[in-house]
Image 1 (tube, helix red, strand yellow):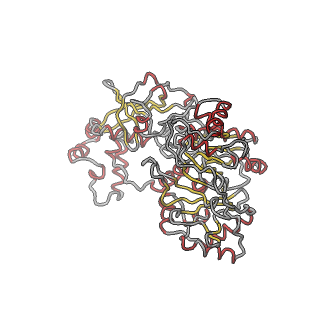
Image 2 (cartoon, helix red, strand yellow):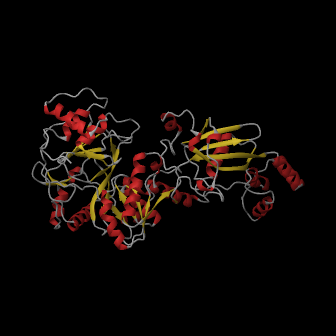
Image 3 (cartoon, rainbow, N blue to C red):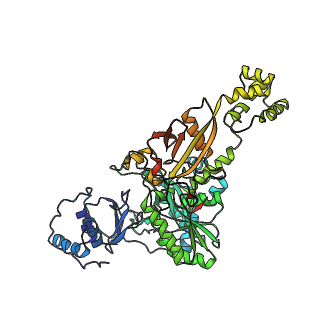
Length: 576
C-alpha cells in the first residue's frame, strides 16, 4: 500500500493516464470503468486516501502500481520507474487502447463527514423514518403482482416508497422532534442553507428497502429505483443501475452507509442461505421460510467476515450459496461463489451451492414462479379424452371413465362426442365398437424419439452462453453449439399426434421436463442453451433452446459426453 505524499502523484493521476472513464465521484473515492470485468461500467473503486483500487464485482484489487502494471503487462518495479519518469516530469503518456476518460482533478476538496452513529441510534432513526413514509399503490402493485409478496409480507419487510423532494427538510425536523439522532445516520446531511436534509429526490425515487443486521437492527437501506440510472454512452441493452444505497457520503455532514450485509430470519438457524441483494433475500425468505444473508455484489464479501463468527457462535453449521444463475456464465460471479466456500471453511462451516430451474435467474424469481404455478394448478382447461390419448397421456380404457363422468353431469350442454373430443365419424365408430374407434385414433398418433443435451459443468468452468439465448451464443463467436461442452442427459420417446408440428413437439418436451421432472431423468429443467435432438430411422434434427422458442442448429453429438451417473444435476451443488 502506498502512503499519501510518498510519490509525487496519486492513483487519480494513474487513472487519467490509463484513460479509465470516471462514472461517479465520492468524497474519498471515485468509481471508474473496470477493465477486468465483462461488464465494466463504473465498477472499479479508486480509494483516493489510500491509493488502492478494488472492483466489488469481479474482486480484482491492489495498490496503484499494480493497476498500472496489470494493464501495461509489466512488472510492478517497471511500473514504478515508468510512472515516476512520466508523472514526475508531467509528461503525457503515449496513446493506450482504452476508453476515453473524463478529466480527473489532481486535487479534490474533502467533504466533511459526520462520524457514523451508534447502531441503536441508526436503528431508532430509520424505524422512525419508515413510520413517516407510505407505500404508493404503484409500488404495492409491483411488489404483489411482480414480486409475489402479500400485503402482510410487504409490511413485515418494512418496504416503503421514498418521499417527495419537497419533504426533504420537513422529515428531519419531525424525526428530531421525536428525539431521533440525525447526525451520523446514512441518508441525512446538512444542505446549502444549513438545514438538515434527507437524501430523497426525483432521480432517486423508488422503493426503500431496509437492511438489518443479525440483531435485527436497521443499519441502512437500499433504494430500488423506479427508473434505472444509465450513462449516455451505456450500451442500449444495458439495464442500468437498479439499486443504490440510501447514503450521503458525498454530502456535507453526511454519512456513508458502507455496504452492510443484510440478515433476515432466525439468528440461530442451523442453515443460512447467502444471495445477492437485500430485496431478493427478503422475497426469498418470505417464499421459502428460510434464513437469508445478502451481500451487495457476488465478490463484496467483506461484511461476511464480521457476521460469520457471530453466526457460528449461534449454532449455524452450513451456508447455502444461492447467487444468481449467471454464476455458470460469469467468471466474476463464479469467483464470488468460490470465495464463499473458503470463508465458510475458515469459520468451521459447510457450504453447498443451491441450483434451481435455470429458466429463472434469481432464487426469488424461481420461488415466485413455483408459487404462481401452484396457484394456477387446475385453472387451465382439462384436455379431453382424444387429446389425452393422441398425446400418450392415457390408455384407451380411460374413455369409460370419461363417459361415466359425462353421464354424471360433466360437460353440461355438450354431447358425449363433443365431451370426448371426437369427430362425427369417430363418434359413430365408437357407438359401433371400442375397437373400431381405437384403430381410427391409433392412425392419428406416432412415437417420437428425442434426446436432451445440456452444458456440462463437471470441470468447474463457466460457459459464457450458459442459460442464454442464441444471440449470446453467436456473439461469443460460436457458429453452432460446441458439442464438446455438452453432455447427453436423457434419451426417450413420447407418443404425439401425427398432426402436431415440430414446434409443438419441442414445446411439449420443454413443458414435460421443467420443475416436476420425470422419475429417472438425470438432467436439469430444460432451459436456454440446451440442445434437443428429434430423430427417427430417416434423419436427426437439432434445436437450440432460445428464449421462448427453439432454433434449428447444427450439432455434433459424437463430441458430447455420454450419459453417466456422475452427470446427475449437471450444474452441481444442491438442487432446489
